[in-house]
Image (cartoon, rainbow, N blue to C red):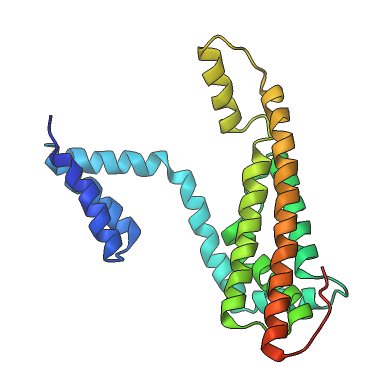
Length: 234
């Protein structure tokens, strides 16, 4: 058995430890593994070209980054903060719980790419969450601001992960159906999706409670730093 192609794995580890560009590291690791396996330069170029053409749809996500960067440069995040600050009674818990419900419902309908970290969380949801949190805590410290951003990203993840399994045409649902069919158990995709619905509801409730606890923790920290006693608002 030829173990030399495993040098590609070592190349990935070394590249990530040195914090090099991930795309560069992966391409170099592929070339190292190919050469170690005895492939020629022409075969390597053909393999890389086929991989690029076969996964070109993934580049659509890259095209959104310049657009979002331009919008942020023109003040999108600041506009989002000012807009959300104009809503009376809107707290961090209420805002992120509403976003969680919207994200789950859209994912259940198969609209998984409507929102996401690049499209909505960074330019919209994160600054809106900061503005909603500051309504009850005052100006956020740098650590608290990062925690709010992380919670906004986690809310998006949970809404997507537990909502998409309810969509019958999802690849994971079809994979489960195929696995059971191989073992002689016939299941309809609709039945599998419906069994995912209680899990999605439980995830919504649990994360909503986490959001309540998170806001109260921010408020306690704010009261401790200012020496004031203010009622929590969830």
